[in-house]
Image 1 (cartoon, rainbow over the protein chains, first blue to last red):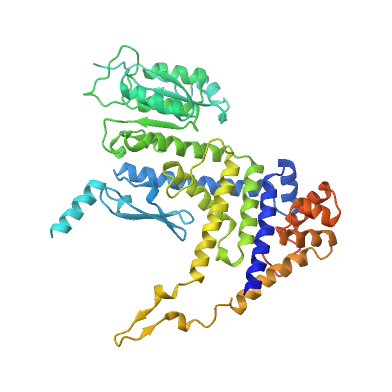
Image 2: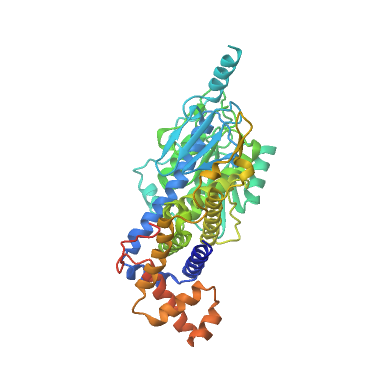
Amino acid sequence: MAADKYANRQLERLMDVLGDSVLDLSDEELIAEVHETGDDPEQEARRTRALLQGVCDMYEQVTRRLSDLGHVVDAGAWRLQGQACHNNCQICGSPLSFTVSTGAISGGPFIETCHKLSRGQKREATG
Amino acid sequence: MAQSAAPLYARADDPSTDRQGARSTSINTCKMSALLVHPDKSLLKTFLIDTLEDKGYAVRTAAHAEEGLRLYRDCGPFNVVLINHCVPHRNGIEPDYLMPQMGGGELATAMRRINPSQIIVLLAFDYANANDVPCPAELKDVSVLTDVRNFRLQRLLERIRVHQATNALTAAELLKLQKFAAFKIKGMGRAACGRTADDLLVEAQLRTLMGAESSVRGRHWNKDVDFVRHLAGVMRSVANSWKRKFGQMQVHLECEVVTVDAEGYLSSPLNDVPSEDLTADETLISKETEQEIFYRLRDDALGTRVLRSLMLGMTKDEIIRECEIDSKKYQAVRKRLRTKLLSRTNQRGGYDYGR
């Protein structure tokens, strides 16, 4: 087991060195290398840009939707479980979640206003 | 007081608008600029200007929509434009609060006609919810701020900064991030648990956005750090966190899981775990990965030597001495290693690491 762990550590070390070395490459060197690996640099760059912008768009969409409906979430309270991000509205306490890879959003705060959800919960509490 | 019915903004088919629209939309990320269109000289306006300046923006201000549009035509595009929803159309015209206030909305629409990618924030402090603010359909993607409590404006500006930095990434920078993520995932081996380089990039970007609002869960982007270096650092940290979690899944404290049954006997679920060792198939995967790497370099004696040295944790200088090569040759070998290890071709077992 120790030998396997040592082998894993060696592999990790190697990949760390190679990964860090990528950051120091010039633009021309990098694009030439990507060509050599058989990938199309333009297409790969476009795909990565779309991926990063998709995350921004999704996060903005979630933030705006919650704000539009009067919900307030503590940005420091997001919990990442697998690929889904979970949180609760600070006012009404309703749970909500979103998944970047699928674009799925779920939870009452995306549908109802905070005021309405708070009222519903109070009614439930008083029976 | 009635507002002028004369068309205030140029129409989309106005030739002068076309000329303006052809202006470059590129954003100068070195010196950030902001335009604030706010009617009164209140404490709130001072606060808005101070906040923008604190965030590194050079701020231009306008007191009414006409002046705002003129400034925009002369000095735009800006990194961000903040418009008070209730801004009067012209100087000397007080807004009639009994009428629907659309000065800000119309101004924002006119700016969007000039530059469709202009980032605009509508300030609507008279409304409780952003949903209640009347907005033309073309401004549906515009951020609406209904109050500035709890650092909302600061957080919004931080998020905008991340968006702009993402949009400003060059093709080479995007490829750097992609390759960095691929090597990170490849180095994680089993601890990646099936996650890909894209998953690592997504989480790093998500944590950066969260860090724009809070440093508790996210990773705050220090403006003095290059955005690519920042994302690489976040990827390192996320990969370490995944590895830690993977390690926690593997290691258990017996006292945490031991239970006492009704008859008082201690029972531990760890008794049912056959062995602490890696399973046979897991060990095989590790060995196969290593073999696969050496197989790819089978025709490259120097490459194999450097590879072994790197895996042993030797530094660049040590490898140069050990292999009796110069720095240029070392760089060339490292390049060969990178291209061979991430190559789509030349694969024996059909591995497609980190994709």
